[in-house]
Image 1 (cartoon, helix red, strand yellow):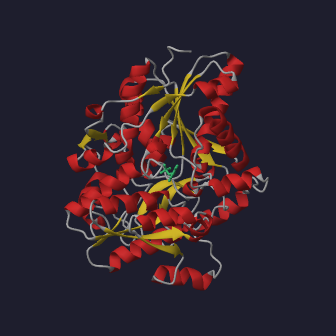
Image 2 (cartoon, protein in one colour):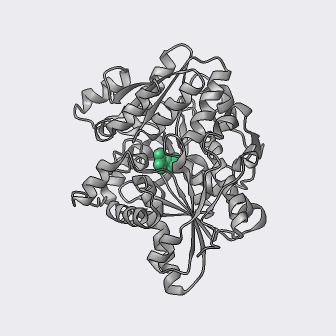
Image 3 (cartoon, protein in one colour):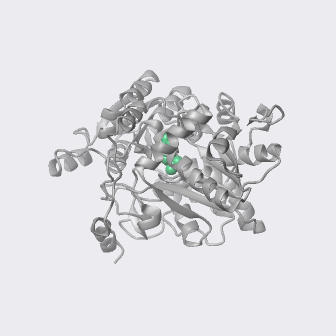
Length: 456
Ligand SMILES: *Cc1c(COP(=O)(O)O)cnc(C)c1O
């Protein structure tokens, strides 16, 4: 055991200096987002009222493969990067598998998840443009916490709309946001037109990422010098997250191995794309045979049971129309504890990659995810975020297949965050109070009906 290296860490000067833009290498580019009023393809200028200009350009950039990380952002990455690549010897032993299991530990960031990688970049570009206020939505509170931290770093005011159910289930995330100086409002709220409309129709609405996005976008559009920011789904967010995979590439080299399969949980796709895309580059350009597996919750199965259509990114229909796998923008997922995975759509890049069979997706039931998370905690010593438990469950499934076949495959998964602020979810699991949710085709078809109308 003594000569087995457990963790692989890069020196500071090896932290990547560029993000990787997979759009430039994709053979079939994502279809263009459409302006919902004119149904014309979106131009970067159309997004300027909502997002910082550089981010709008990054969003639609299909030509530049490498995008330089600004020094100011890279300096802040140094507070927690590189994150360790870890060989999961404990998990391998517990599963008695011949597979080599590695994970990239993004839970070591100051707010406990990968979200900070994009929050720092987005806050920086807003600051550079002279913006004073930023706003956003948050589900489980991970993105809101990251954005609050980043706003504080770059001297911006942050207003966060938090999905009501999470606001109540995860009070400590709210405290973290407030500690960094952010103003936090549960959504739907009476503070916006969108929130009022939703509450009038559904007085007991528990909130969803869709309702919170609608409120935050409205605030950005109606407040001078205020920009909206988004923690997932959009292409520029995933671009910033490629720092994960670019580091992992170097670290796997230190370990002398190359992954056969790369696995990550899937909400809007940013941590998945972040770890997968730098490796997928070699699949697209050199035909490298690697599997890329997105693990989504069975209660919100947009990749495996959704439909590829143009749909809104939010409940109220404020965002551009995005070509993506979707369950319908009015789909309200069951109240699973992996709040960060309760989103109806998949993002335009990943949706195109699924269509082109460059990646696959699996559905994980809530109870299986927590069972995997508890095993991981016991054998690797880290309590994973409920979201990350989905990646662990999918990895365990692959490792057990290796046990059956005797194959010594190399598996790499992303540990997107720790669960230390989600212990109420673990309490519920340990007390036997959690259930699986089954979703009928009728329910899915019902929420897709409106999307079908949109695409007529
Ligand atoms: C937000 C979040 C996710 C899901 O978002 P993606 O954009 O799909 O990565 C997953 N894990 C954690 C810990 C999160 O905070």
